[in-house]
Length: 128
Image 1: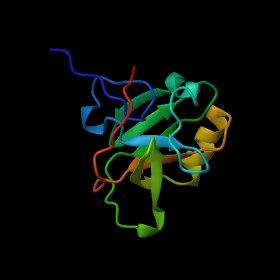
Image 2: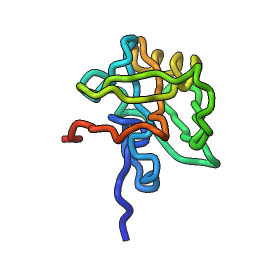
Image 3: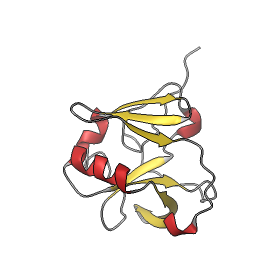
Image 4: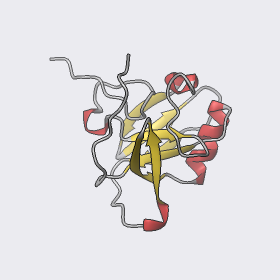
């Protein structure tokens, strides 16, 4: 039986064992608009895996980035709103380390956001 593919980071590579985390994270620009694969093509070159409660992000020439998978979202100071097309999405900022890592890799200012577990369903554009 083949497991369906899922993209832990929207627009990034897909994994067979990540169904529960499909498009849980997204990368946004400084205006908090989602960076699609067309706007950030290097997202597709990331190496992703799920290990020991973390989303492990690797890229050539970069140190590994570990992002906790399941954290109780109880700190309102990190809640934000991100734009995915016309939809405002409730998200949680994953912090300055993740932002610096992705800014370096993508070559443009950006931040890693996690879709808040209490957010409405996101109307993602088709993957194409």
